[in-house]
Image (cartoon, rainbow over all chains, first blue to last red; front, side, top):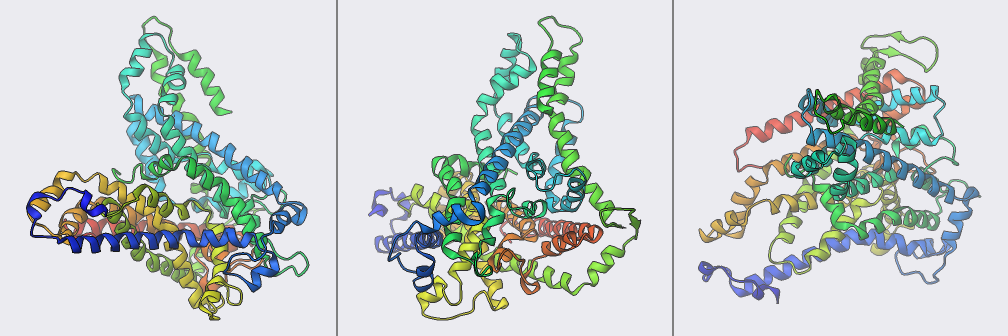
Length: 294
Length: 310
């Protein structure tokens, strides 16, 4: 139906026949529906299986729940003294890290975008070059350092290594660069201090990029696994991601309890999905920054 | 803490209305970048340098460190485990990258074309898998691909040991990587396509180019940099793969067996047995490989004709 609504270019009268166009239309849309289904199916199963009892999940892994139950969600909150603590840990770590990282990167990005100073381009290029270095390189030294500081199994041990983001700096600088300098000069003439330029003008006008970065960063920290695995050994301090794969039957101790794990996965992905649904455009524009021009 | 100190300093140093040698103006940018730079030096550059030094020493975390030259590197290159895990990492990379890029690009072209009706509906759905934690998605895939009680075997009525046969499990990792990554590159390619000015495509259309010719000779060459970016970043991320293979076959949080473990498992394993020197050396070997692979890709991109993209 949609095919005819588009204006046909003048000189192509002899080219794609309406039938061919319609076939292409059907094929293209079916392909997209197929990919969308494949994208959603595992999530759909995750949600469905979280509402089954642990015995039903074994007899009926792929169908709709015969008996809808919230037992797995109750189990989550009772498991090993309550996994809610681990959710709280994830929230504390991710939000603290996001606030610090956004703030540090925004200040630096402001200077790189709007000031002329000696060494600016050199420092910026060097910072960008470090993006090539895999962050895992710093895991052994940070582990030694944090062990000496008694930061293993602490919030600061989880948070501190995540507060500098060169990607964020780059993303914010790109955006702030496009904000008219005249705005700042006018405020300067009115007697605004450098700090006021940043706090009163730059931060509010760059809200979209700050939001995009904050979302991506929050998600990155919330989803991180390797570093929390290294730096925490006690369940009371671990973020939910580290605990999730360990949810085994308390009695047998080795078999995973799938309904509880699925409920945990639903709860662990839910905050990010909600944020995504609310801010999807900002989310996806954050992804693109630097990719197309860079 | 740092930030607050700078706030006050910046306020104080901001010049009042009178003009003079405005030192405030000179140091203001440095004050703005210093919290970031100091943290970055302390948390990344310093540790990275220390890690390089560490890779030439034997150090158990206490007592004195002994200089051992290249012994750590030699030892690691002599491990069977190293070569197996390197092979696995490269398998995960090459196994997924081409299918991933072709699918994402194809989807981006489709969504950009006039053929698709609900563009704003498909876009977030295709992107959705990407925002989910790799740990959670790997667990979901573990339950999908279970032998006895897995969803897929249940649907097919089979008992394929997807995750018990390590050869098959490696492919499940590849499937997971493709499923998880499509949305990201789809959005990037879509953004790349929107930068191509409509006039270029219209000109090709007026000249009678078919859809395939337009894609092949107009769109692909113009997307060259986006593709280069995509392949380089994907390679870098692939060498750092850790979560998917480990969580996919994990039982009670144990790591993946060597047959399907990625290279980072060696770094972690050495670290957990307090062999910090070799652990750091694995990190630097990883870095060298990332650098070499990126360099080769840049050279290939430069060496090809403008219309050839990968």
